Amino acid sequence: MAYGVKIAKGNARKAAAVKRRHIRVRKRVSGTPARPRLVVTRSNRHMVAQVIDDIAGHTLASASTLDSSIRAAEGDKSAQAKQVGALVAERAKAVGIEAVVFDRGGNQYAGRIAALADAAREAGLKF
Image (cartoon, rainbow, N blue to C red; front, side, top):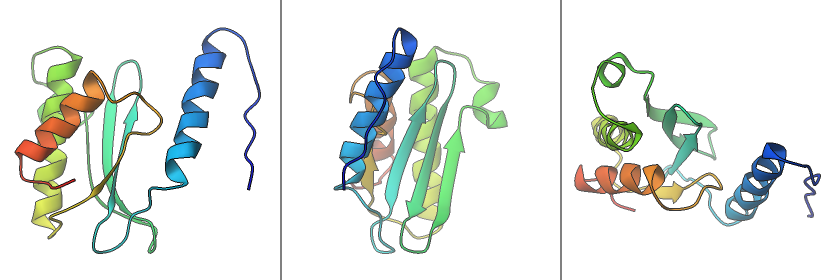
């Protein structure tokens, strides 16, 4: 099935490129009850990480920079992304999830995305 994303100008072109990459990644990545999907959503200011079971359509665990514990913390955006990764891994392990499939959401695996993934791995979540 072909999905088209309209070509745009300026910042909308970047958003369209991210959308195209996300569609391409989601063709192959899907979460199951045994191994749910860890999806990362990145904006200019915040990051959100969710562990999703795609078959049931439920979010099993989530964390974001909008959480009160992370929002009050000091540091740059990469440091906050590390805290989000550790927190989502802790919450996933609390509900019995040991392994996930990583969905970078169409973003490049660098910077804040990589920091979040590395922190989740260090907290014991397997990719």
